Length: 433
Image (cartoon, rainbow, N blue to C red; front, top):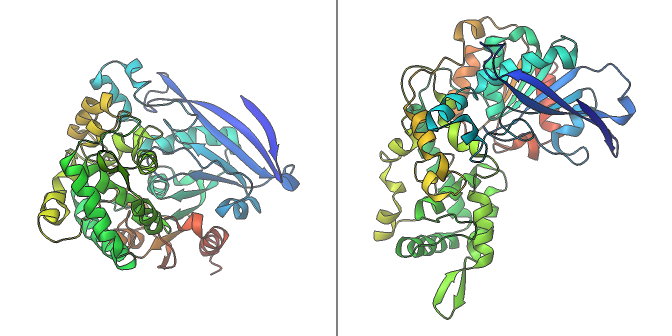
């Protein structure tokens, strides 16, 4: 089913596809995928190569662009672009607290969600490529988790790729989730230190908010229980180019005077609930650690367990002494399934996924070692979300991959740098740089 419409300078087409839930059972249950096709209006009638965009996450639908912003305008100069809502996201068959009970209980829900990792997303792409590109190989642009998917693509179906461009998304090929988080917490601590160096007044502000949350129960307007640990998770902002500034502006007007004494303001609470709620992207919380699982070892709430190895992140200990409060980063914890009303009904499902021991490999090192697909990757120096050392180790393991290591951008460089970032990477895959 298709529907075509226009924006200034663009022709957009809604595309919907039916794919197997389990690609090993092609005659079994199916789900729907949604993608938005985009082409520059002055090139709409031309036979252009395809670029398929895989969004970061997991759990986020593709960007909804208005006009030709960021990297999108550069891509439209030479490609017909497919903005894919990966399974379970955006307009594709949804997976959330409202729909998952249709599967049955937590065990059935966990079995269902185990099929929402990079290997299934790649096989979805291959299932629709014949319909979209007539079977011709296409270029994939993978941002963050989308880069993880692109690495899986190179492992499972390189014949489907004309080229692969990765931005902030070169995964470790063999690290367990524990290894990922042991590398992550020191990076996050550096980002927090850099934030406080930029905005030293935020040290006391963050401590005051944390003390307030340790001594009072605060429930946000949407029903979110704002604990001190949940407040610390706002540190996820610090991995983006504007994130430190956004966190500063959030902290500077947190309190308001009331007849009952100082309270967190309505404006602060409204903004915080928008930043912390997983209602728009519950898959991020549900399958995030599963993106690192590749063998019989369970993830077992890896980020929570590894956090105990870094006691400096304990808010109560920081406040009892004279230490700055440390924010956390891209980590999923059991307490989120108690705090967030969008996640509470899925707590048992999440527990079952964390205990799962039948994960299959997502990458094929032997195949990557003989790779023939042109590949280029932007690796951001001291990226808070994806470990630079892990990325460079993987870059050396993929034959022919060319890297652009830069500290000019943070993890969201493909958005902030836009045309320049994509230009540089396309030049690398064409051996023009």
